[in-house]
Length: 354
Image 1 (tube, rainbow, N blue to C red):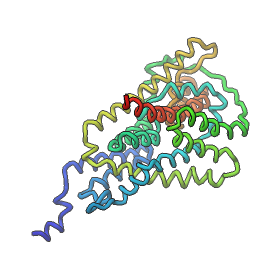
Image 2: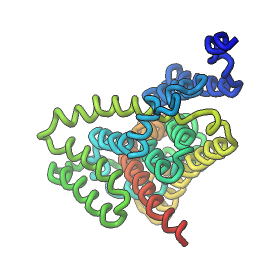
Image 3: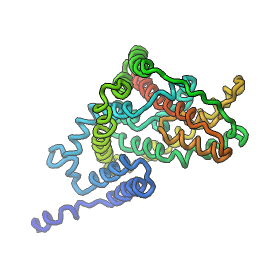
Image 4: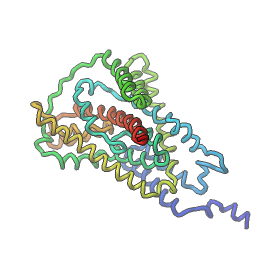
């Protein structure tokens, strides 16, 4: 009987909750493959959720010895290495010239901020690793799910808050040349300023701007391409499957998970609405009207949100081209989400100490 139990120990240890997690993991994999929603992250996260919910969870821990995914978690998530390396890679991918050509678009990045909702995944992961390590799984799923659902969530919110005539507003675009000196100084100055104002945000903004400096320097092309491709791909792969491994049913199947998902959706809707309403507010005092849809692009879902805004503008007027303005706001949204994360990192400990 003992040998029989050893032979079928996996079957005997099976829990009905595992099935729910297989469905959730399978759903994320389906969205990644069939719908092409953030496949580089949702697919590894989905598979990681399946792996950690196999009997005995040996990929996480076995006989008191950390498994491979717990080692990744301890060395990559808790030490913040994975998130900041992602920021370095993202920095190497971002072209800040649209923002520098239209600095006023920076205001829309500030108008559409909401942690989890409109903050990018690495920011959410980084902040969660400081304050809520047990909830990194649902927070990450919420962040990347809503980023992927930009084409579904944003259009109805935009249409609800704007009239057809507002969506048809055309905006003049003057292609101002940004000097190489400005592109090089921008990441350096942003790092110094943010490091002085919010020192705790330095790992986030510093690595993002370092990646951008590698890109704009013009003398490190091989490193820039490596950061954009090999580094981004490897770290994203390890980050995704490690985050998935935090989704054990004992932590994930909790009412708090539903609250996190609901808060993420609410934040995303309010971020979009906040940007649109801010643009409409500016139009009350501006001679040159802003297409209010530009405000919706002030989130960090780059470049999806900018494309959605341009598609909506084109649907109302086939000759209306506001993509460059939307891209400027979209890039500002990436910076805004990181600043928001830095403020949370600074304010939460202060408030808890009161």
